[in-house]
Image (cartoon, rainbow, N blue to C red; front, side):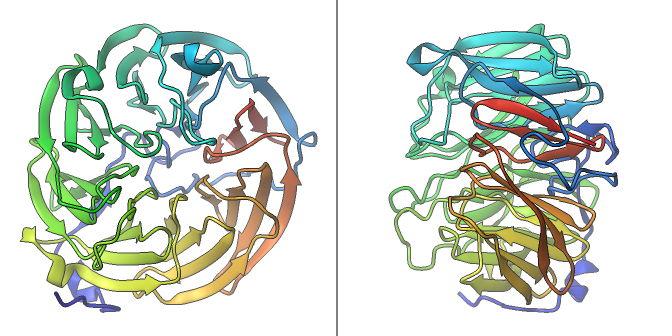
Length: 427
């Protein structure tokens, strides 16, 4: 197989048009899914806090009822989050709703939880997604639920009861996505992996398609969230995992194309955690346990491996934290705090920096204007100014909490979900 590295994509861009599908426009009021309206980790223009601490410019914090790693979402005047309800193995899966004063408006229990295996994981890793009228949530237990904005359960099912227990080394991490009237989930594990689409209104299965490859131990597993895009007037799903990137018809789940080459030595434990991101016609794929980053073009049908690879970087990458893409640049934050800025067309490294401090980074960064917001697992929160020439830390502050969820910047405020509390920061 011949991999084409650092190829000018101008000609490729003329062949097809790709953009991420939106449920809401990118505005000040909504953060309807894990990585924001454009699924790129970029906040709408606004005046977001830069100078703050665990006490300064902290508007409120509320204690959460149990463990969870999901990122909050926002629909105008309400904040939604999943969490364990109660401690230990006896807790239940739950969803909570707050207003912008931190007042708990409602909480709903959805059935017995499956607690996390990883010390920083939980049974409530996937984030909620909303279409503005309904809320959709998935849990490690297999519970898949739809609620209205007032907490009424509209439908509920359990995918493990229907299709068998999910067999992952760690905790389920894939968030559901919305596509053409369905809510779609990717279940990629050591077993029969599949994509499933449920009707948003009824919860009935619209389609289910297997997605299986022969891989070494753990390499067949994935924790990534699919991309939903429009390509040449058609809705498509882009899925990464099991050493491949695949494109699927949203209406049927049928595979349209596939790209291999993401584990050329067929190594064990080559699972993917960080999700793909897209800018214009280029999909960015983190792989190889944080040691590789690739840019691929996703036009064509069938096996497009030979023509898809545009560039591939070794020694630059992210294992858990999903990159940010904006204005032709990629911002990548590694597990140990290295930060890179790359040109998205060529993969050329524009600069490299390092966040001072210790502790892993599981959380994905969020960009607001030229400010990059990054959390360490052990409680440090950074605000960094980024330019084409480098990065400067404007604020480094410490919270008495642990952060795995991503910071949400919306309505000129920051929402930050920790193991213990939900925080709202503003000026």
